[in-house]
Image (cartoon, rainbow, N blue to C red):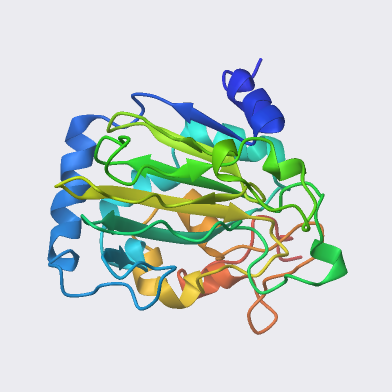
Length: 269
């Protein structure tokens, strides 16, 4: 039996779940150290969605290799496996550091960016992605804990959330929030005196365009430093059956390993 079954059922019912104690302090400190050069208060958000008092660090696997541990964490991928088709991709991966006096984000979903209004993506529908938010700091009432609308993954596009329907994902550092990509949520208001740091890997169906162009954000020379699973999540793979994702008629692994000849090939006669 899948050890994540109860969390899978919570996502099906409520749209989200929280798993406590998944990332040890040693891993959090390693990630913090690698993020430190990029979190110097010099890159505030450019709009109300990014947050004018929030720092966001993109292309993380090209900047902070330690985050690979959470991207391919087996407990989380067990959950993603239950919702997305085989060969799913990493759609987004960024650090979000919410500083004091930040205002709430607008309510939004993660799995249909750029496709609102298209009938193929109209809700209600199954999720096209699964999002995660890993807490490197405690998520509290005051410091901008993610806010969620339970059950909104079953709504249609016409229904707007009410303030009294929202809950906050209060969780200690080292925990992870996992939720359906079509669940309404937002970053909360930070009216504390400290910052709230998190990492958010987001996964999507293999046929859906990634939010960040991962094979450009993490080019072959860099991707080659990671595990086979990470490379596949980035997009150095093909969708089978079929060959979606090829490069110049060949498997994209040849960009990392020029000697790659495929898993199966016939011996010379």
